[in-house]
Image (cartoon, rainbow, N blue to C red; front, side, top):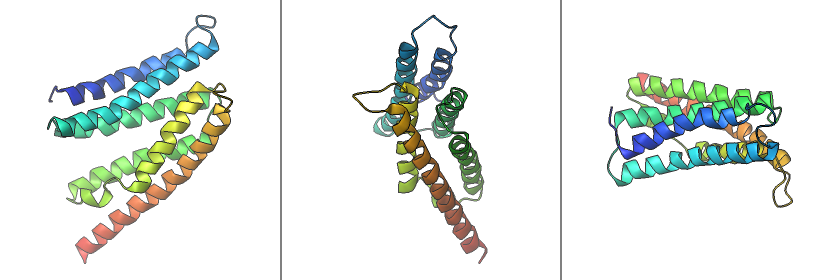
Length: 190
């Protein structure tokens, strides 16, 4: 296991998960509700920023590693799943959209693992639709965590719309990846 700056940032992202979850489950009265929302949103935003930064630094500093390539998506999925579970518990996110997103992450992770074992990992590489899904999902989660109105905008309503859009894009990207895997395997057996 390589201990380099990108991997340390990935571990930091994993360590931030229980902190932003715990913010919502402090005993009543410890912090005002708005401050809890701000702290949790800030911690999630910091974790999200480390996701971009660790990849950038790994490439820039030539510190890519097999362990980092494994750990980075695991950290992302843990972070998103934890946030969605908390948001469902707080009744800020829909169960269906959250289950679609979490289920897809598990399914596509398994598909990517299988395709890598078959030597076809390039056929399920991240696509534009996957990046669009991730963007909608992250903005939705940030708005739903913040929850309170911001600059006259209803963060809960906009976050809900974005989460539903992310769920739609999640299904679209899943079918795209499944199709690409099917074509790669079909071509291999032909």
